[in-house]
Image 1: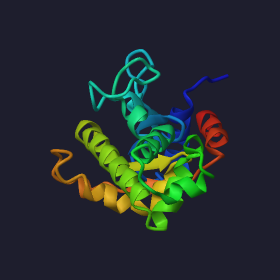
Image 2 (image 1 turned 180 degrees about the vertical axis):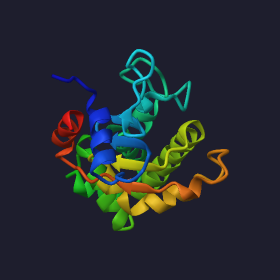
Image 3 (image 1 turned 30 degrees about the vertical axis):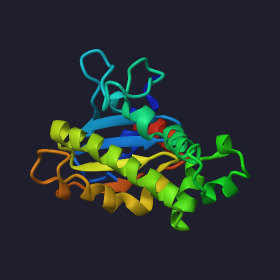
Image 4 (image 1 turned 120 degrees about the horizontal axis):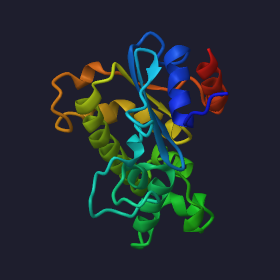
Length: 209
């Protein structure tokens, strides 16, 4: 029996058979209710000295930012996960601005989801578009740090929020200019994960392959 972090296992599956197949060094991120990450070097999960490495979702971006469930402040997870995206939309609506989001949520701001924000943005809603721009800025700055630290051959994005962000991947990559000191960030592709809801099953299989 093997026990492994779900994001690490999913990263390995993507490296072996999925969207990162053929790449040596892979950085995987899964954006959903949180942000999980996995690092694969030369086909092997990087665990660090004690096995606790790879918690990229808890890289701090704002020391005075919102409190993350992990106990730190300003983690990228608490700034750009699905709940964080919805929270920022609710904060903007609380300012009294009109938005398609109010209609999609049937007048209940607590019901707003990242999927609704993606739909409203595609329909030209300015609040939803502003939230997505902010999210892209945060993710680009975070991934710029990842590139400076690891310089992976490919970045793979999975999780429920990835489908909402899919149309904006190039815009996020454009934001790397100034977000990292690496001189060639544009050469690092960002691709959507091959395994969606099957990521767990694929990851388990990859561990035993």
